[in-house]
Amino acid sequence: MPAEEVAFLEEVRRWRLQCVLVLTRAKPQGPLYNATSRMIEAIDDVAEVVTGDRRTFYQRDATTPGEALPPVKRRTVD
Image 1 (cartoon, rainbow, N blue to C red):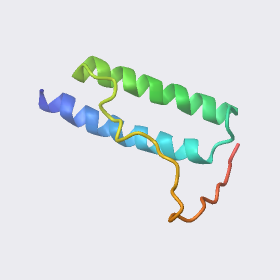
Image 2 (image 1 turned 45 degrees about the vertical axis):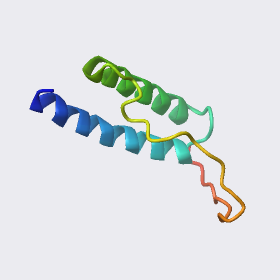
Image 3 (image 1 turned 180 degrees about the vertical axis):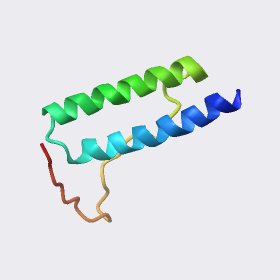
C-alpha cells in the first residue's frame, strides 16, 4: 500500500475514534448522534475502498460490563 494511503488511513482512523467518543456522549438518535453516525459510515466506506475491508477500524465486538466492572456514568450532549 502506498505511503499516502497509509497516512490517510491513519488520519481517518483518528477521526473515527473521535466520532465514537462523540457517540458515547450524544443524545441517542439526536441530530449530533445521527450526523456522527453518518460520518462513521463514510469513514468505513473509505476504508473499504482503500483496503477492501470496511471493518478495518473495528477493534472487537462490544460487550456489556461484567459484575466486576463499576457502572458507567453517562453524560449526554445535544
